[in-house]
Amino acid sequence: MIVRTQPSRRHWCVASLALLAVAAAPTGARAAADPFEGDPFKSHQWSELRKEFLGAQARFVFDERVQVKGPAFAEDPMNVPITVSADLPGVQRIVVLVDRNPIRKVLELQPLLAQPAVSFRFKLEQASPVRAAAQTADGVWHVGGTLVDSAGGGCTVPGGSRADGSWTQTLGQVSGRLFSAAPGPDAGARLRLRVMHPMDTGLVNGIPAFHLSRLSVRDAGNRELLRLQTFEPVSENPVLSFDFARPPPGPLRIVGVDNNGNRIDSKVD
Amino acid sequence: MFWLRRWAVALLFCSLTVALAEAPVVRMAGFDLGLKARALAPGVYVVEGANDDFSLANGCNIINTGFITTGAGVLVINTGPSKRYGEQLRALIARTTAEPVAQVLHLNLHPDYFLGNQAFANVPRAATVGTRAGMQREAKAYEDNLYRLCGDWMAGTEALLPNETVGPGPLRIGSREFELREYRGHTDSDLVLIDRSSGVAFVGGLVFASRVPTTPHADPKAWLRSLDELPVARMAQVVPSHGPVQGGLAGIQQTRAYIGWLDQQFTRWAEAGWEMNEVLRGPVPEPFRQFAAWPAEYTRNVAHLYPRYERAALQRSKAP
Image (cartoon, rainbow over all chains, first blue to last red; front, side):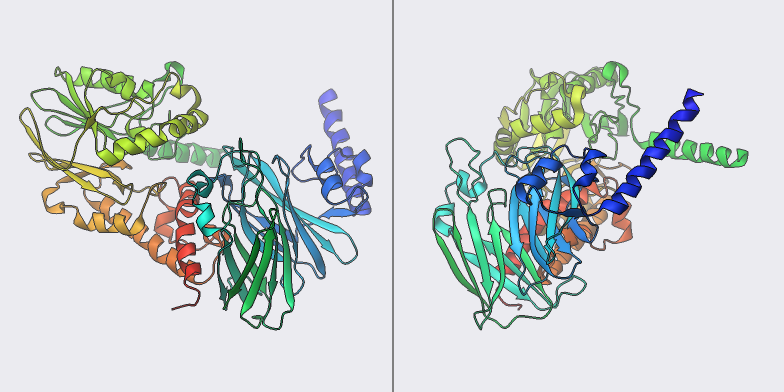
C-alpha cells in the first residue's frame, strides 16, 4: 500500500510545481514551493547569487533562449571557453555568473549596436554551473546556463605571463580582426580581440588583483558599438568575440582601462 | 519481448568478447591489472593496455609497455601509470623469463611512461635530456591528476625519475642491437626504439592506433614531419603506446590522417573566426569519431591546440 501511495503523492507535487512554474514565471514567489526557485541545476548558490548580482527584487525567469555553451569538462581550468547568446529582442545587458567560483561575476556586456552575444574564456575554480542572465527592456532577467566539470584550481594559480614576468612587455597590446562572415546563424560580422593582460585574480599569494575592468568598441564614426565590463575570473590575455548583424564601418577603435588605471587604446582594421 | 531480451544478451556478449580480445581483464578486488605478455618475436614482448581513457574500471591502464630479453638482462620499455602497475609488470617479467631486469627506457615524459618506476628502483632508468627535464617539471601535476582520476589504483605511487641520460644512436645490450631515434611533435622529445633483428619498433607517443591522439605537449606540424621521417622500411611491426598492436603500420597512417586533418581544419576555422565552442561542436570526419577516447580527447585537443591557431589568425590583422 505504501509503495502505491508514494508515487501518486509525488505526482501531485510535481504537477503542482509545474502549475506554479507556469503561473508564476517570472517571479520570486516560487521560493516557497521550491528552495531552488526552479533552477535547472538545483544549485544552493542560486538564490544568493541572483539577489547579489541581479538585485533582490529583480524579476527573473529561466529561459532556454539564453544559451551558454562550454565544454563538458575543463581540460584547462585557467581557460574555459564560454559562448553566450540570447535569442531575445531588446537585450539591455548580459551578466555572466559562476556559482562556485570564489569571484562569481565574470563579465557584463551592454550589446548596444552588437548582437546580444559574447565569447570569452575564464578561470574556473571547481565544477560549477556557468550562467548568463540577459535583461530585456521590461527589466526581466532571462537566465540560461551550462554545467562545466573541473579538476579545479583555475583561480588560485598564477598565469603564465605572471609566472615568467613577461606580462610587463605586452601589457595592453591588442591584436584583433574583423571577420566578414561569422559562423553564427545571423551574424554578418564577428570581431575577435586578444588583449594582453595578466588578469590576476588577487587569490594567488602575494599578487594583488590586477585586471581589465572596461572595454568599449567604437566604429569609424565614433559610435559606441558595445560596452564590456570584465572582472578577475576572465582568463589571462583575454580572447573575446562579438557579433554584428552587419559589418560595422572600420577601422574599429578599442578603448579600455584596467583596475590600476592603465589605458587600452587600439585600432582594428 | 523474449526474443528482444535474447537479442540484447547476444549483443552484450558480442561487445564483451570484442572488448576482452583487446583489453586486459581488470579485477578491482586485489587491484589486479591482469597484465599479459604477448610475444611479437622471440624474446620481444608487448603488454597491452585498454584502448580507452584513464578510468577506475580499467585501472588507468591504457598504455602498451614492453620488454625484451637480450641475453644480458631484460630491457623494459616504459613502466606504466602507477606503483601497482610497475610491481605487476615486474612480476610478469619474472614469470616470463629467467633473465633479470637490466635496464628501463622511457620513450617520453608522459605519466604512464614512468609512474611505475618505484618497482624498478634498483635498475638504471634512462630517458633523453628533454624527457628528463619534462618529467621533473610535470611530475607533481601528474601525480595529482592521476590520483584524482584513478583513486586507489594509485596508492603509494610517487614519481621516481630516470637516473640516466640516453640519446639517439645505436644501443647494444647483450646480443641485441637496437636503434634509438629521437623525434618531436607528440612531445618535445619522442624516442623510438627499433629492435634490429626482429624489426619490432616501439614508437611511443608518435603513433596512436584507433585512438584519438593526446596532445598536451604536441606540435602538430613537427609531429607530421616526424611521422614522415620514420624509417618504415626497417620496421616490421609498430608498437604504439596507445591502441591495439595488430595493425602493422596502419597506426602511422591513422595518426597522420588525424593530426593532418586537425592542423588544416584548425587553421581554416581560425581564419574564419570560429570560437572554441564552435570548434568543439564542428564537423569531424566519421572515421575519427570511431576512435577510442572520442570525444573527450578531442575536447582536450581543442583546449591544447586551438588557441595557437587562433593567435596566429588574430596577429594577421587582415586575411592573406
